[in-house]
Length: 202
Picture 1: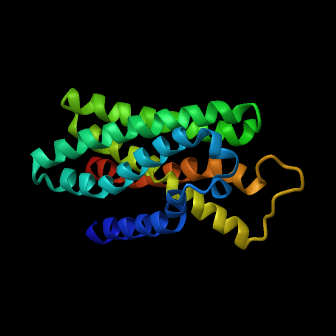
Picture 2 (picture 1 turned 90 degrees about the vertical axis):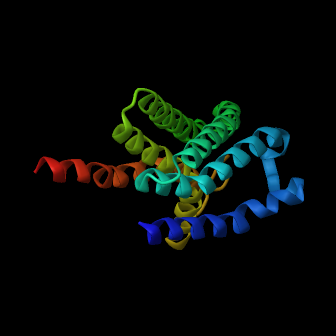
């Protein structure tokens, strides 16, 4: 588990340097059509990055049962970061719907998935359902990592030779990645989440 969380953290740092760093330049050319909505984008990026950086520590502390006080503090930070990131996500998705509903609906689905998984994790812990809290927090973090998975799917699509059609508002690979970046990781994560319970039942 330590190696897995360390690997996730490394990938996140690479993502930060490669894709988020250029936004710090405040260059309108890099932002493209996001420039008029840059404040919502900043909220989305800031909340998402804080969530994915605190996630590995939060999961490790929850699994090991160490430093419950720190675990709770990080949990509150994660919730605040999710709320900030989601506020930007819903705003951006709403503005995208008129221009490209396929791309926007994928982003909207991502925002709804993060809202539900995080909200149910919060509800579970407040009702003392610790095991369910861990499961829903794992799902929440998988959805939070869609920031990274989105770029992974884009790179994979480009490696396969997928190109944007002429005149398309959003490239086909972006439309596809907007759906795959959260749905596929959730699908693959579920067997790992359920396996301990199934093993105990057996």
